[in-house]
Image (cartoon, rainbow, N blue to C red):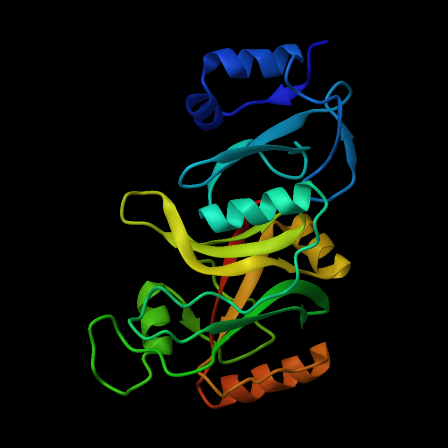
Length: 262
């Protein structure tokens, strides 16, 4: 039975016309599915459905989502991320693990990421708070100075002076939420495609409230501060207080970026 599938030109180019036509004809596409964005049931025979292709270095995984949640697209991910996504699809639970080393530095400092909701003008917004566990040096630099914030400013992030103001959008960056879990923060690549600026060793679980807000807004706010500025805060009110203190000291930058993938 034909399916109400959206297959973007990018997805068709990756899987080929023959496979795309089989999907549209219903031969290789499931009728019912769990949306990889909102995690609720969907049916490609009754509602418009997006095909989302996660592409790693060697393999690819085709997922399905409500067209109202995300458009059909190709999402480049690392092979490790792709294995994590497959584990999520097959029901294997992925535990939270430390973040991968930041690729903008020769030092192997690790980025910690906290997901939380930030209140701005009486409205809750999904946010990522990023803090390294040590100083970040410029690539090739032997200096002991921490260049974490200067590097982000050069990439288009802006200083935060008032936590009640929504951060400005940044071009080319996005947050990848796949299978209902945070996989990576993507930045513009040198070849036009996005590359991972940060990626989780295993998909990072987020709260239902955070995921719902992110899927509703299609935008995530990212705040970043130098090592030792924010710390691990067990509650969102304490995280907000730490962010305000960092902003008052001129140690906080931020940007608003779209939600990529699911």
